[in-house]
Image (cartoon, rainbow, N blue to C red; front, side, top):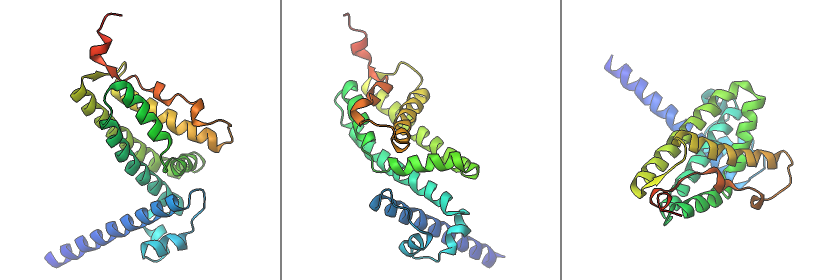
Length: 204
């Protein structure tokens, strides 16, 4: 019985390791070749596994691409958090965060993932799972930073981060759909209501 449990645990660990390699390899390929469709064979070779492992672990290449896109986004979000912590005040935080998010290399891949969730209903739960994780992590980061700096928001932090990310991702979807314009046409910083509470109480 103990041997069977050990073997099952080993198999599970190997499966998780394979999933992780596939997701990381796909994210790397998408970042190195933005806008280029990568094949299952290329992904498998980069991950050091057989091509049938893609469907075995993810069901489809589309599902793997969604996982990889959001892995890239979460990695970028950690870099954004470092930029946010360096801001001297709330106004700089809003500006710096907005500028950095619009320049994230993962955004085009995430836009494709969102489009896949619309066109392929079976991928919608995967997209939703990753969006919820992104929102939770962002809310936790903003909450801790605001508490430590004495900043406030004009709305609940859950609404704050959802509004911000919805604006950023929506802008990328518009561009991919053919809308003309540049980042200068979008006031992403205006989607944030974070402000210095002390400054807000000073008389005008």
